[in-house]
Amino acid sequence: MKRIFPLAAACLMLTGCGAQHANEKHSRDVFAMDTYMLLTAYGNDSVNEPLIRAEEKITALEHMLSVTDAGSEIYAANHAGGAPVTVSGDTAAILRTAADVSAESGGALQISVYPVVQAWGFTTGSYRVPGEAEIAELLQNVDDTRILIEGNTLTVPEGMQIDLGALAKGYTGDAVTALLREAGITSAIVNLGGNVQTIGTKPDGSKWAVGIENPFGGDQLLGTVHVGNKAVITSGDYERCFTAEDGTRYWHIIDPADGAPADNGLRSVTVIGESGLRCDALSTALFVEGTEKAIAHWRACDDFEMILVTDDRLFVTEGIVNDFDAGSVLPWEEITR
Ligand code: FAD
Ligand code: MG
Image (cartoon, rainbow, N blue to C red):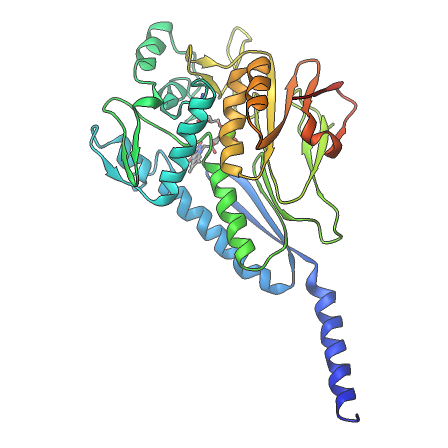
């Protein structure tokens, strides 16, 4: 009994000590993919090592997926003159989701729209308004159905160029959260500039709160969603945009139907679901589709919820309504199945 007591006391002290540090916040800032990222995990000091590995994973994915990095798989495919190239499982997975979401959105998502995005200057910041003839010519090579992905073999037809900017950050968030989960982390939030992905709940057991930014400017949020183990991914017209000399504003999400910024009354789309990759692809596709088609698209699926922001109201799908707190900027209405 005498010998057990000190052991038990030592155990209690250890447990007490562990409990003191178990829920500490550990964060890592990363700048990659032209985006400020913040990785936050709760636990003791052992969560730092997986956070470092998460940063390394982000850098590796950036080199693999960047359209401008001459060593990337996408660069190789874009410059192969129509010949097949071998890609990693990561790239193949992203391409398959791109093809699926392109098909289910009636071609609203087209990763081959990249040359048009380039022509508007969104890739460099040297903004311009391309002429109609220039856009018409570029649109001749925009057609995702001509991209071949068979196993790990990718063929981009000659004259076409692809870019995964619409959905690769979502995949990156999935890879990071998987890595942190495998390291035993049960409470984390990863913010990849407008793409928020969460593990578990906050250390106190409550859900994570993710704000819906105000596309009209100002600090007031349009609302807040409360989630656990979910991705919350937003595409908006306010992220990368410019105002031409005549006062017209243009933004970086292009409608492949006419090669101009998608201008259908939607200001932002937030998609909430399990897969960051799919939610990211959807956020861009639904933004191009516009309110009516986006609602029809949501009704045809059962694996995501969404918040659509227009100039005068928010549309919130029924599956997220109970976890949504409205702000006071705009009224909102529920969308039911
Ligand atoms: P989302 O709505 O998710 O995506 C919009 C983007 O998708 C547009 O910016 C455009 O590129 C593309 N797009 C537009 N319309 C369509 C459409 N109809 N269908 C398909 N795609 C469309 N940016 C830089 O300036 N410099 C860099 O070095 C750089 N490196 C990057 C490396 C990687 C691996 C990735 C994934 C992105 C990189 N970016 C870079 C791009 C930058 O981060 C983009 O702004 C971002 O990917 C767009 O995401 P979003 O969440 O803002 O918008
Ligand atoms: Mg997207």
